[in-house]
Length: 98
Image (cartoon, rainbow, N blue to C red; front, side):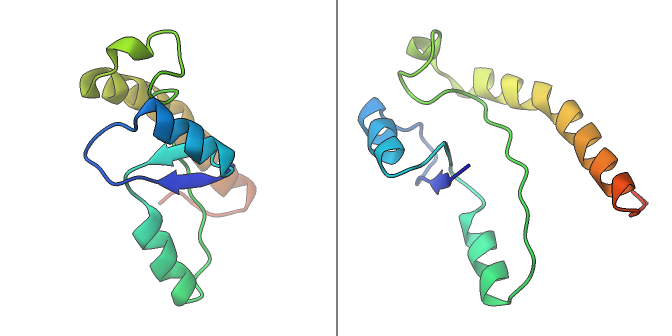
C-alpha cells in the first residue's frame, strides 16, 4: 500500500481523497511520515502497521457523518488484531515480545 500524509488536524475533503488516489495513495493519515523520513536518512530499517479509521471523506457508506470519535472507535477496535499479528510475526522471526 502507499501511505500519503495530510496536514491535520482535520479530515481530508472528498476532492483531496480523489486526488491522492490518482497519485497512487491507498491510505492517508496525519502522522508517521516525518519519522519514516528520518529513519530513511539514518538508513534504519522501517516497517509500519497502519490501522485505518475510515474510508476517506465521502468514500464510505457512513462517511457523511464522519467525526473524530467514530474514527477513534474504529481504530481502537483494530488495535488488538494488529497487536496479535505483530506478536505472531515476532514469534515467527524468533524475536521475544519482552
